[in-house]
Amino acid sequence: MNNDQFVRYKALDRCFRDYYGRYTIMDLVDVCSKAVKDFHGDEDRSVARRKIEKDIEDLKLRYDIKLVDNIRIGHKKIYKYEDPSFSLMKKLLSDGELEQMLLQNVLDTLTLYEDVPHYKWLYMFLQQRANGIKADENQVIEFQNNPDLLGMEHFDELLSAILKHQPIQLEYKPYNKESIFVKLHPYLLKQYNDRWFLIGLTDGYSNLSNFAIDRILHVHSADIPFQPAGVDLVEYFDGVVGVSRDEHKPIEDVLIRISRKRFPYIDSKPIHNSQTLIHEQCDDENCVIRLRVQVSRELEAIILSLGSDAEVLSPASLREEIKQKISVLYEKYSNSANELQS
Image (tube, rainbow, N blue to C red; front, side):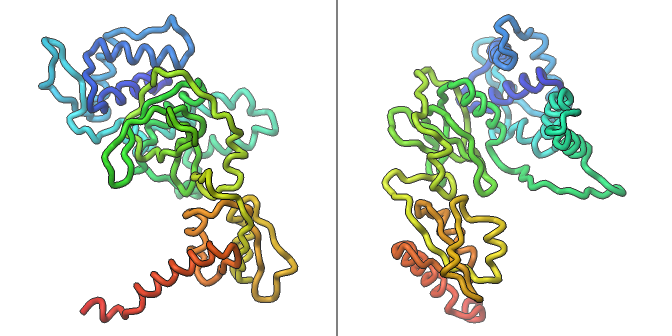
C-alpha cells in the first residue's frame, strides 16, 4: 500500500463510517481528491472516478469490507458499511499492516540521514522494528500495543488539523452519556496512562478542555475562524499529573513519605517532573519527596497505587481525601471472603 492509496482508503473509511452521511460515488471522488490534495499540498492533484471504484473493489476483496446495497438517492447508490461499528483503520491497526506501512515511511525519510550519528541509532532501531527484531525465530523486543484502542484512526486527521490551525467539529461520546457535537480549536495531542487525549479550546469557552481519542466518533472540519491557544502548552501542563488542569486549583507543595524499599522505584520513575527529595526528612526507613502540582484524581490514583509504601504528609486536604478513600476500601474488605460467598 503506497501513501496515496492509504490517504484514499482512510478517506473512504471515514465516509463509510459516517452514520449521517449520504455519499454517492462522485461524493467519494470529491472527498478522496481533497484528501490527496491536502496530503501533497498540491491543488492540481485529483482522483479519477475509476480509481475510487477500483479502490472499493480492492477493499472488498483484500479486507472483506461489506457495504449496504439497498440505500439510494434517486438512481444514485449510497456507500456505507453494513456494520456501523466497523473501521478499516482499526482493522489495519489490529493486523499490524498500518504499523508496518508507517514504519516504512519513516525509514524512507530517515534514509537521507542514516550516516549522521545523531540519527543512525534511530534508523537501525526502526529498521529492526520493521523486521520484527527476531533472534532464533523468537521475538526479543515486545512493544506495548493495544489493537483494540478505539479512535486511533482519527489520530493523523487530528494531528493535521493542529498543524494546519484548522478548527474541527467532533462527535464525542462521554462515558455513560449520549454523544455530543463540539466545535473545537485543536492544539495538542497528549498521551497519558496508555491513552491519547486531544487538548483544545471549545468554541465559545475560555478554558481548555481534553477529549479522550477513544471516545471520538467522527471528525469534520468546522467553518469558523481559528483561535490560537494564547498560552504556552508546555508550561500550562507543568504543574499537572495527567491531562486535566483545574483553573480554580492552585499549584502547591505535596509532601509524601515513601518507604525505603519503594523509594528506588519512585526515584527512577518520578511521579512528576517537579519531584525532589527532602534529605533532612529522610531516615533509615523512609524518604520524603516534594511535588509542585495541582491535587487531582490522577495524583490520588498514583498515591493509592503505592499502597502502604506511601503516606501523604501535606496538604491536609489531600491527606484527608486519601484517608476517606482508604476507609471506604477498608469497609469493603472488612467481611471475609467466606461470608461474601454464603
